[in-house]
Length: 384
Image 1 (spheres, rainbow, N blue to C red):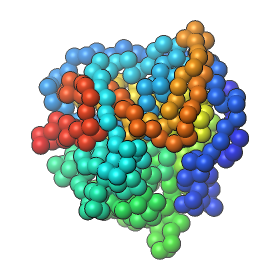
Image 2: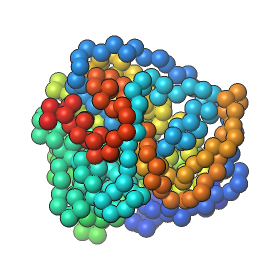
Image 3: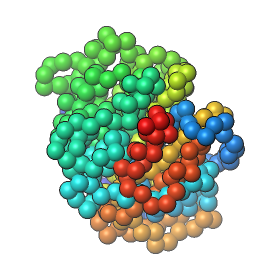
Image 4: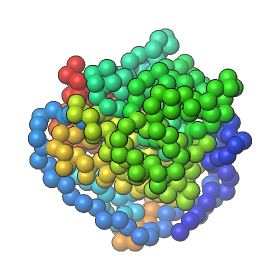
């Protein structure tokens, strides 16, 4: 069943602008979007909990943007009581406050997770004084590990950008795109082609990426066939669109990135973002949230499937913040229906969950700062 928001949320095409990238912040929804009517479910596998080592060789870090406990439970209900997340036996909570605000945004929240420092809302990969800070992706690169980013937003959006870029404002999309060429990232998949090709400075960064040895793809079927080498995949001029537009882009891209990165014998770091759970919260849309929560969980399943076979991979699932203050007011495990209400169309200050599976998972129990998540990942993966 396809249900649509009453106003345009995702803007695609040649006319893409920086304003269009954030139209989801002003989205409104019809009453029918407040209730998710259950439908088909997917089968959830149970994976072994036996691992080869005490510390991970690889980390797959999955961020459900805007995902709080209610969003998780909405997905659990919609899939009639089971999620791939059930495999994560170690669970904690993260405090998300930024340097200048009790309620963080994705830029500051992402930077805390990527670089271990609190910064001001809107800042990307810099501290509260706008001084660049090294991210775990950059540290992994310096240690010879393969690295990757996957997102259902533009790849230049706040969360993925915070792992690879260093800019004072999250709205500096073209500058963020240019930062990609200053790294040796192995794989990135998301929207945002316009920020690489339709630029004010006239540069075509896609052609420059090709000159650096990247394979460039736009079609998901072709993306899924890439097995090795460097891959720059931009699936849309703007964002990847809602589920009816992008299909299984996120789980397919997650699996593709893992296949490529796992060729590196030293290990890898991969960040995967389910961006639009947040956008459903901004729109007060239960349908939107549940659709994207289930899509995100299927992507978690791809990570867990690899980790269970590999035995040396830590899978972490968390959020940068909660969005909408989602309160589940009704539902049914029997038919997968979810009803919810929303006190705000913005972010909230509540703690967000952390789920862990694999070597080192026990480090992520209890209440911690979001900056602690970075510190624990870095120590486990890189030993410092």
